[in-house]
Length: 247
Image 1 (cartoon, rainbow, N blue to C red):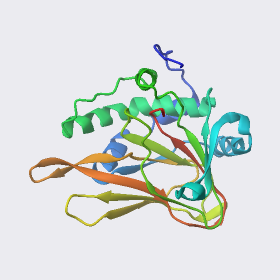
Image 2 (image 1 turned 90 degrees about the vertical axis):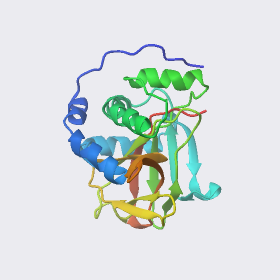
Image 3 (image 1 turned 135 degrees about the vertical axis):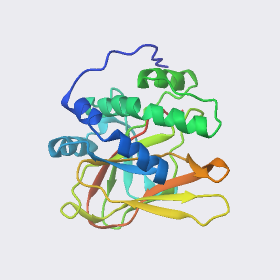
Image 4 (image 1 turned 90 degrees about the horizontal axis):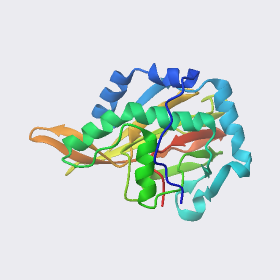
């Protein structure tokens, strides 16, 4: 088992600067209001193409899932093996650092004693100590007619409550359809759907499974699931950035 007990200082890169330059006030407000928020541009077209091209290199991945075999939908995805591609590693580390204050604030509002450490390396070490040692960032590939059923990405005891999906294909050129969909179930209410249209290289930050919502008697817990609507034509690639590792 690989145990991470220390972290290296963050390296300044154009991608790291791009992440730091996002409108984090607006992202936090969108998450509190809707459970999801678009980031604006995260990856440049060449970065998107580089990551999408990795899909056919089986040496970069630890497992491949054909969704129809498991009732997950239609299409497929692959989990990266270590070492993660530098772009994926940077996204995971720097996005976590920006999201951890939101995650800790949510837990405080929900009355949970769990608090997340400031750095992703320290959080991954916590996962590894609990036997969650397999990396979870993944590439998804959809073709015509493919879709992703509503689900939650839970892989063990330790769950970071936010994750990010980044669209690597260009809507209208590479594919049509395939919208990101989030549903929210509030107590004693019908489910509410939220569709987040994404541009090429744009990400969506969203709740993994639960989030706090403000009510007349204080905050309460709502349950969320996410998926992707049917691809009408073409091919859609997505990068999923999940911050907790898997058992």
